Amino acid sequence: MATSVESFRLSVEAAERYESGFVPALFGEWAPVLVDAAGVRPGHFVLDVACGTGVVAREASNRVGGVGGVVGLDLNEAMLVVAGRVQPDIEWRQGDAAALPYEAETFDVVLCQAALMFMPDPAKAMREMTRVVKATGRVAIQVWASRDVQLGFKPFYDVVARHAGPDAVDLIGAYWTLGDLQRLTALCAGAGLRILATMTRTGAIRLPSIDAYVTTEVESTPLIERISADVYHRIREEARVELAGFNTDEGFRMPIVGHVITAVPAANP
Image (tube, rainbow, N blue to C red):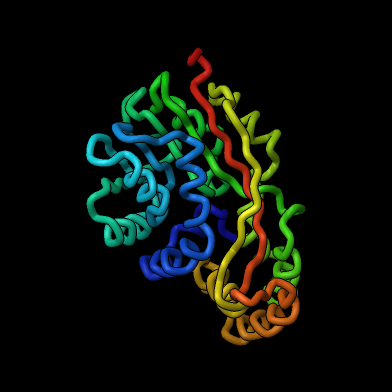
């Protein structure tokens, strides 16, 4: 099986599905939370690391107005193609989080939403974020909490494992690998950051139906390329039963827990 980072280098078509599926279903709720935690305001110059299709960069752009600037950086060119289509007036740049193409102390704020866990060397990426933020600036990172606190995901993963094998679960389960808050704060300290605040909150995956959730989970990831039509059908059929408890009058609503950490360079008094 490919590594999670290799596996998430998606095609433009998959990036389009990510923007139309995952962003409104999940990431859109957390973007303003992360930007609020960082204190983004007019005049700031902001870097969104591993920006994907740009939901956090767009939120930050709304805050800085015409007197600051926002850059969205991602290794995946397909993500940037979609980001540029959605909001062409933001600067979108291809680059590696472990080797950011900027001078030291370039940005007032550095943001990273739900991406650190997919990086081959999270510690190195964190050091790079520390390097490019100003001594008086802030770094704000959001990750998902550990899998053992995520209600709903275990039954779905059990369904996937029964029909597609444990490798498929390893692929879609990469989200939770940095969910231990103690480990995350240690990463920040090792990168030369001092924690200002941590926040753990519960949001929700919001979709019209269980079928829509399964479609988003499968077709917005490389899992769709690794399973047959028959396996996909069986996953969908069984998920309707196993996830029925998350149906509401407003559609499918499954809780998801995440952490947000806000930090400053350790030299910042």
